[in-house]
Length: 278
Image (tube, rainbow, N blue to C red; front, side):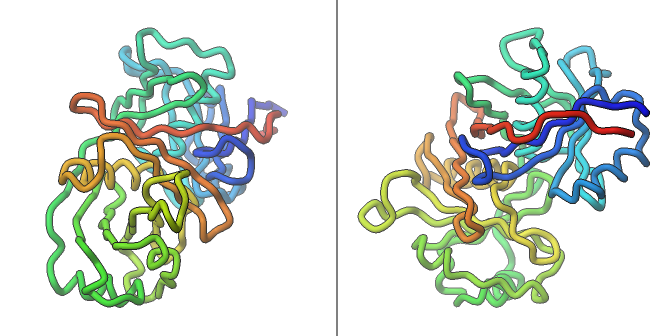
C-alpha cells in the first residue's frame, strides 16, 4: 500500500489549536483528481492541499487546494501552510521569494524569520454595493444599516463583500442568519479600542462563508480587506488583525504594504506529522 507524507498544521497562530487547521499531502504527483477529492472529503477540514512538482518553470512547487466539496484556485491559509510544509521537507526557493504555482497562477511568498507572508492577489471586483443588497446584508448580520460605516465589494476570487463597523464589541455580538444570504460570503471588520480591547491587535475580523459557516482565520478575506482599508486611507500601511475570537481561536494576521504590494503574513504551528496510506 503506497504512502505519502502527511502534515497537519495550524495557520495564523504560533501555538496549536488557536488558528486555522490545514492538511497537507506532499509528493502528490501521482494522485488523480478523484483521489484528491476523496482525501479532502475524508479529512473534512476547510481545505486540504496537495504538493507536487511545479509545471511552470517560474515556480518552486505546485499546490492544489480542495475543500470537502470542490477545488479552489487560491486560498490564503492553505498558501502559508503549504509553503511551511514544503520548506520543512527541504524545499529551497530558486530566488528571493518562494513562488507557488496554483490555479490562480503564481503567488509570491516571502519569509520574515519564521513567519511567512503572501502577496495579496488583485481584486476582481471592488466598489460600492447597491442599496438593496446592503439592506439584505444588514438583515443577515442582524444589525441596522446605519451601523455599517461602509460596505464594499472586496472580491479576490471567493466573492467577498466587506463591511466596516465602528466597534469590535458590535462585531463580536453579530449572530448571522445563514438563510438570509446563503451564497454570499461576507467579511466584517472593526477597529480595536486600545482602552477596552488591548493592544494585541488593531482590527477584529469575522468571515462568514457560503451557507452561513464562519471561518476561523481567513487569508483571502484579510488580503482583500487590507487592499480596501489601506487603499481608502482607513487603515495604516501596517497593522495586525485578530480573527476567530468567537470560535475560541486567537488568529493573528500581519498586514504590511511594501511599495505596491500588500503582504499577508502569519505564523504556522506544526501539529501532526506522519504518512497517509492510499
